[in-house]
Length: 619
Image (tube, rainbow, N blue to C red):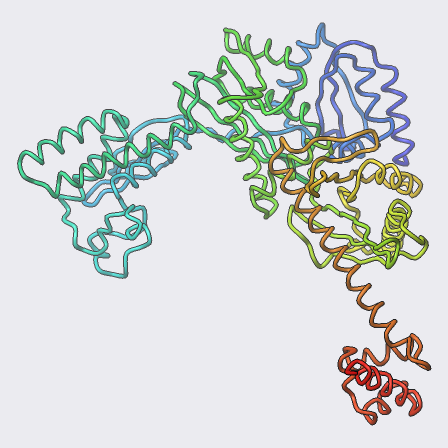
């Protein structure tokens, strides 16, 4: 059956569903479950999949293309549908749902046996003569603890073996930045190393406060015994612990127990970040990267349901970086799971807002690692996506500006930003052909039409680069008038590309994003503001640079064409041969006669023009 016919058949069946809450289950041709969802009204929700796909995200379009049949289960309430959906997703792991890998196992701190012991984080206990501390639930916190202990007590983290590797090679960078005592030099006694190692173990077992008390007492004792070198080492270790505690305050929470969630969406993937706080301190951190994009409220809701279906601990407070779908249902479900009240919040200011923003920055960093960009660029693109309400982060942005002087030498420039950075190989210049005089709206319409006519020509030839690539976003240097003038061109060509304008204030600084109905302020979204400002400055620079170049050429050309017998063709040939007007003016008669396209009479007139002008200028 043809895909269109199949879609019509599925829609017909969907329209026969009851207006009752329930769960729907999508299958492909092999019978495999590929998506499970819940609905307040099954008929309304399921029929949306098989209607127009104009408002569907790419992930949904792909899923619908693979649906061969569906089934459904009616429930007494939407809340029961939510619980059933979570259970079925956990059992069946459908490919188009957000799926989280539950790799949370217990972690241990391994203390190797023998001389010159080492600290490492491991997943299981083995009978190898080593000692094991644990188990711990959070592998992240264990890694952080071991890393802190190594840095404070300057223990090695390399693979060198002691004393076998004494004197073999120079110490690594950690020694020179005072984060390793470098036993590899062979200048440290085993007794001093074991003392530092034991203090590191005490720090891990007792915590920073207990460790500081013990080290302070030891330092005072060493000072009384006139062991000043030892006292100085202990003083430095106490200082290192206190510095670490100061850094940890940055990610402390006034709420004793809570989880903080944030997401960042890119072109093809979504990154979720989770900060877990216990006792007001960051006790665990988790990162998840899932394929596909969907509206933020839906993504948050689905992620929360999946996350707490694989995690036992539910805190009393959950802070999010934006609104979530089904918030009341989620709070009720989590409250039943915890046995006590759970509240979901979206902080707008203060310390909690800063925590959410920090969580979002880390989500953007995880996303950047997948795309090969920087965390700052990924964060800016995600902020811009949220600000403009885009389906996905605009990885490929085209921006246009018109430049002229009182309608003369009318040109346009197009710049491209890919993953938040200028892609100069894709920049393009346009000479305005159909518009005379100063008509920026008409000029912009011509440029956009010509650009996307090239796109359709490239598509016919199977070329998907350059003009053959459809941008994720178009930004025009201008206000809502520019957007209103250009939008009909895209509509007539059947292209669905988000189109916005960039508005400047009276000091020529970026102020807002324009759409047909008004403006969106962007000053509150710092990274998106910086990105849009960079794009606007770059497209203006590029367009005005091209305009000046054309004016210069026109001025040069008019100088030569003012000579009798020198038309546009000869003027162009002379410039190509001599490169500059100065070189033409300094050429002798014979050189002018031998130039391409020149005759002896024409050469004489050019020679006389410049030399007579020079003489008259001296009088």
